[in-house]
Image 1 (spheres, rainbow, N blue to C red):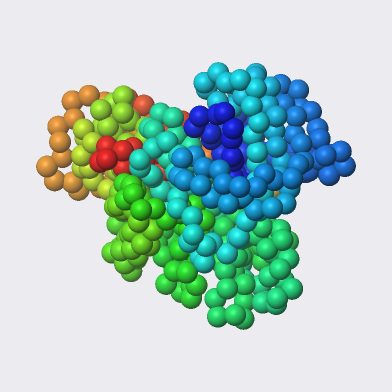
Image 2: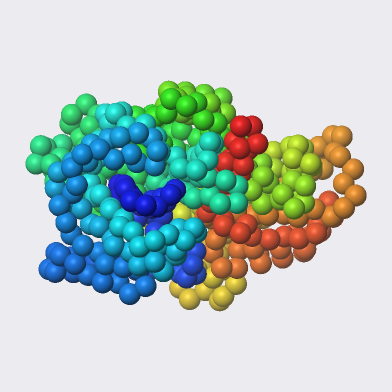
Length: 462
């Protein structure tokens, strides 16, 4: 974790490494893997340079210096004083131009201090209250693959994310100390193993060529995973700290599976609400497809179809003037694609996910067996979505009379590959659609649309 303490700057904004990667991805158009590599390389170069020189100058930003931490108490973002531990900190003596870039309000030359480290056993660290920045509300996208938190305002918001996964390694005091020294998030459950969770889990899984374990499966809490609840709670507490202010928090839940099945949405929703309320929030669920409507369809009076294509499910909502007309989900999404492609190619799902992250074009002619299989199963997901929409609309009684064409907005990581939205449009155009459509488009920010929609819902209720 990175904490920021500033002198002379109002409303400081702090970012962790995941935020930097997401911002690099957004600004450059690179895929997640390439953006991650770029950020990692940059941070490593800075660390090596500081270790050798104790000071480096970055033109247009300022001078980074390695100095002893100041002692005493400083108020972090207005929450109240807290002790700064002894040791060293990286301080940025920013130029005026650099500060204006970081903060929208012009400021004099200032010094910004970054503190690295801290207790990574978050389940036992309840001493500090949450610092949730500008807004009085939060939105949480609870996805099978990733949890995304949004805070701030509907237009000026920021997000942070954690991988919804973990790996278990044998326990030893030596291993635990090494994990602490390297700020790796972990949990102790029973003492025989360490559960490395969140963003660090993927790195360890790739290193050991192992599959990550999932607290959630097919869109809801995983009933076959013994550590599902404690790990989910730990990941949530990695993103959200306790509060005494009772802020509004809206979290996403899936719609009912149109194929039926034993998915217990009631249990899933109740357990998440209990976890979030135990942290002090006024927590309420919101349908994931409706969250996309709130995020993307304000200019259309919140009328249209929102679709979130995640890891465990694809969630769909048809809304009219912000009111849900129908909601449902299908059990075919990113994990289904990974498992299916792995099965027919003899690879592991982890390897298939890595191939997807390297970049796949669903319009381009396949170059190998992996791309061929990926195109087959992406097409299957798209067909299932469109056929599900047609069937659900046809079966809905008392459908509102929609006089104007409405848009369809698609979001989520499974919809990100190049050519997905083109294939989706082609499938709709090929067989027609029961409602007049004005547009079929991708969400402005596909990976954070659900979290932003949850935030908007929380702000409206504040």
